[in-house]
Length: 460
Image 1 (cartoon, rainbow, N blue to C red):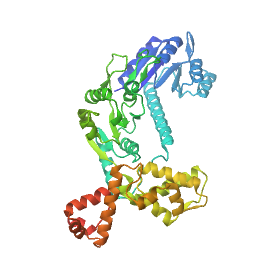
Image 2: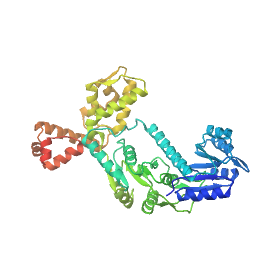
Image 3: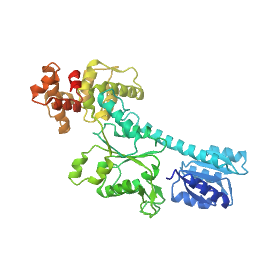
Image 4: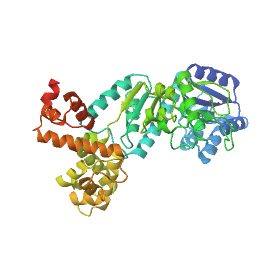
């Protein structure tokens, strides 16, 4: 499978032939150019992962070409080559951002090492940039609840496998974090992690985004572009909100998952891809299948290793940990050191339902840090921040904008908690009082993140 796309610029045909064969044997896709003009044409038509430029060429200078592409805004990693380079040329190339400067005759082993290290560095920097963008938005996989313990175990098992993973959960539960954790703990961790939000890409562009396109494939396609599948080769592709993918694209995605090959838009070449897919959605995909909005055969292909993320209200004991984590991030970002929650303020947060889950908690904490005038965040501050939502929780069951399933879960939770308290914490007595089978009651408690009499649960 392609490890990367390389452009080699040299005026010696023997060197071009040798490098093309050597790099192809190592899994690279190689284009060659015998002069600066040809190289510029190729760079204008397609994208590369890395380039090898000779310094002295009949129609120009490799260092000057490097300077021109830098002025044009290109961040293409470039390795310079020369058999009689001067110190001045090496210094100029380094100042322009050349990755390395190799002397001819080339050592194949050293060249391969430089290419491998460069691509690894570029991918690490891209992931670091993405992580910096995401910092604090949904937090880490923080939590000491049973639900989080089980989730981390499932992630560890999924990481060791190679099958497609299907992550489901409400908005804001951290589906992308799970995908990153699976990739990072897998054998593909050294490969790229690409992500694509299927709901954010216009329907007319989603095929190009996923599979790439050739130059001239459509208006505006001025150069060849590799899609997410090619970029993720050797690594992992995270398809977020896959439930919102158009039906026409669902059929094409199914074919790729079955055949492990793609064709760029406007192209005829079949390209093999070695990609592990992690897909995610907050939709009820089984209902979407029944309603004809999602292909059942694609669902079957994606749902090999299912992972269901618990909502925050099902692991309320994790709220204080997450709140303090987000508080530390928010106080640092907003220059408000020393802020802390009172017991009353934290208790009110724990009691809230969080329909937006961990992401909503993060936003609430940042709002509190910005708006609270004092260094302590108390119950009154939290109540003001939540608006009328907390009062509505106490005054009635219905709250505008909150989904029915959330309201129903809260009502069910309240009933079970009060019934358990009435029966002194005894699960067996609670089950009898509610007219439920004890095993059914245990399942209800587990689903809602509640805890009953531990001893009885173990006996069951």
